[in-house]
Length: 163
Image (cartoon, rainbow, N blue to C red; front, side, top):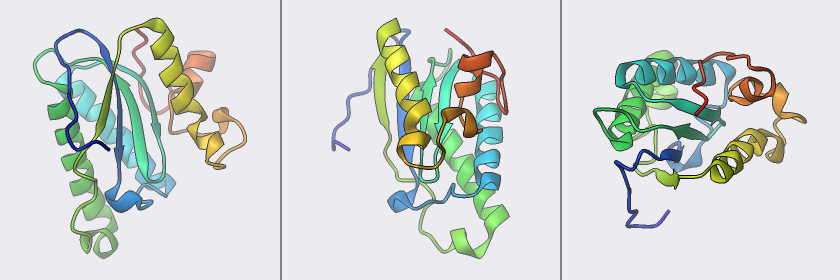
């Protein structure tokens, strides 16, 4: 990631956000870990009141497509989400994770999505990520994403806010 990322907030854009586990380790490699992450994502979304337009949780990174919260920046939301996830993962997984100096890489990538075309492009990228990585043959098989919402209108593990 570039050393100096420019973040543009306050434009009512969606934000395509990518963040990685420490040293891209598969710290979200188990279904239980991904389930916990989606639960915490939903809690943080409810607390900060932002639209969750799309997501995918991969073994070593996460992609989100979110709206801007009314009272905080996406940076604050990510900080809270990463802190709570790190804390909960350390509680649940004990020594294996506790020995690491951190759970997440410190930085995150944020791309402003201002058009319908870009929104579709980013959702397609997210939803095909597990297929490209060889984790599943079809995006429908990966339960830790918003794909089934866009396919059948089903929310799955977390409510999606179509924009």
